[in-house]
Image (tube, rainbow, N blue to C red; front, side, top):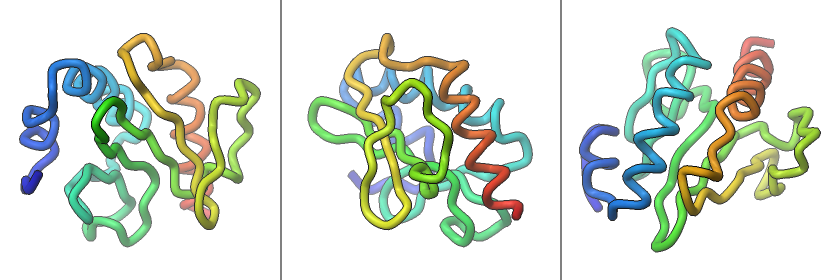
Length: 120
């Protein structure tokens, strides 16, 4: 999928994945006021500053049957839910298969923690 903006990316997804993305995007935007969301390496990424990916905070990446909601410094976050799975480097993520997998309060907490880490 080759798109130039987040809306087109989400619109191009299958119904279930599009619903997940459309429910999660406003959670991300509300938790990260003033942080820019843009396409970077083929998927939506929210980063500090004007250059996508310069100081990335989080991403959405669609696969065949789920969306990964990833946090660049996710391994450094406090996650009492145990839902974050460690990935490469400092990254951690959660797989979202349905809109019921989205926990706005939990994800907002993660996003705010991740944002604060980037400001240090």
